[in-house]
Amino acid sequence: MSSPLLVKTINHWKPVAEVLSVPSSEMEYQRLSSLVDELLNTISDDETHPLASLLETLTTLIEVYEEKHHPVADAPPSEVLRFLMTEHHLSPTDLPEIGSQNAILEILNQKRSLNLDNIQNLSKRFHVSPAVFLPVEQLK
Image (cartoon, rainbow, N blue to C red; front, side, top):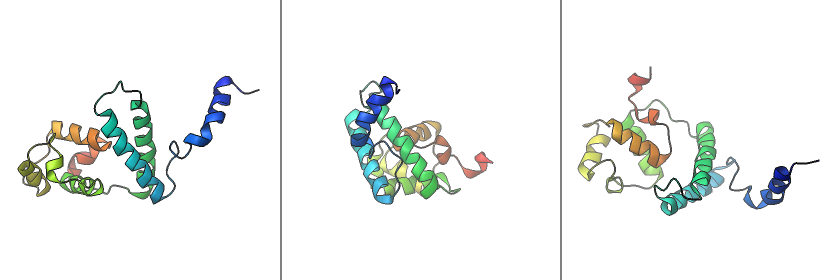
C-alpha cells in the first residue's frame, strides 16, 4: 500500500518530470537554463516567493549536468567570469552588482581582482560555488 504522498507524487509526476529531472542532453540543459533565467526574473531576490524552492531545485539539477558535461577547469577567476558572461549572453554593463563597466573590464583583463562581495554576488547570480571565483593557488 502506497503512502498518500507517493500516490500524490505519482499522479503529478508525468506533467512535471521534464522540469524536475537532471537534463540528459544539451537541449534539455538549455531548456532548464532558460527556465531558471525566467524564474530569476520572476522571483528577483525574494526568498519567500512561492517558486523560490523550485529555482533552488532546478539549479541543483543543472549543476549535476554541468559537473558531468561542462566541468570547470582550473581557471583564473577572470576566465570563469568571462565564460559565464558568454554562456548567459551578458556584457559588462549587465553586472552592476559587481561594479561599473570599467571595473568589469579591469577584472576581465586581470588588472583588478574580485573582492569577497563580488564573489558572493557572482556566486548568487550564476548559482555556482564561490570557489569557482577564487584564484587557483588559493584552492591548493
